[in-house]
Length: 149
Image (cartoon, rainbow, N blue to C red; front, side, top):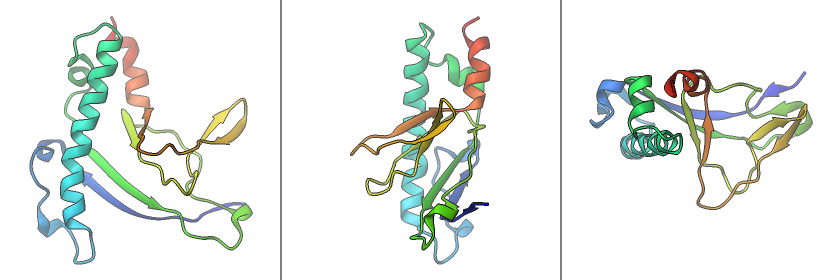
């Protein structure tokens, strides 16, 4: 049986505070406060731009998907895949689906940690310099049939 072998930082941003800096008292002394404060707003802006582009590509008003989904929080996870002495017995994260609307990934150029299931086989997704990977999650897939009606 394979086991997970990953370390991570996780930050949750409630919807009502997405346009405000995160309160510093919510962080421990060892957390990366300046990085997290800046990333919250940058990722929120990027997700808005992506949902607007998807809406427009479907021939909808640019705010249609955002309005259908409503106010949502934002989660940021930074995964660090540790060097492993027995890689055949481990994986970074277990197979999963993204239950949110969007997942925006910035891959490490040295590690092809992202995999996709195609025709019953897991394939490594090669990182591209300067590119983000945008995965459409369950909330957007399920709601898409209602969005276009």
